[in-house]
Image (tube, rainbow, N blue to C red; front, side, top):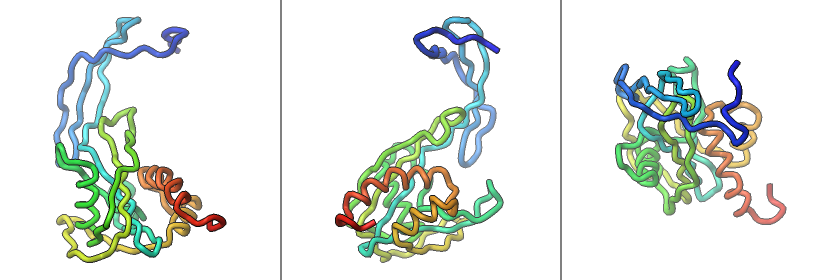
Length: 195
C-alpha cells in the first residue's frame, strides 16, 4: 500500500503520450503513459475514448417525459431510458439533442436548453454526456432509426418516471444523472402544493 502524496492532496500525474490499441465504430481504446510527479514512477493506463454523448429530457405539453425502451447488448436485456445518442465531432449539444430526439422518437419541441454535462466514467473514459431539456415536445416527424435500432417510444407523467427511477425501474446511470439535474427544474415550475 502506497502512502499519500502530500498533506495538500493528490498529485496531478504528467501525461507522457499515448498509443491506440484498438479503433471501433463507437470508441478508441488507448494506452496512455503517465508519470507521477513526486515518486517519478511511470505507468500505462487504459483509457476508453468515445465521442461525446447527449441525452434528452423531452417534456410534452401535458407534463409527460418521452421515454424509449430498447435492447441493450451490454446488459443483454431491455432498458428504459430517455432518448439520446452519439454526437458528431464539433456538434453543439443542444442541436445534437434535438436531432437525436427527432430521429429516435419523432418528437420536436418549442424550447431547448442545456441542463448540464457529466463525465460518464472519468476513471477510464475521456468523453462527456450532455443533458438537454426540450419543452413542449410533440410527435410530428418521421422516425429515422439507425440500422440496428428498434425502439418502443412512450410518454409517462414526470412524477411516475421519477418514482420509477427511485424504485429501481430505471437503471441506466446517465438517465439517472439526467433526472437528477431535471427534477429541480420540474419542481420549480409546479404550482405550490403539487408534488
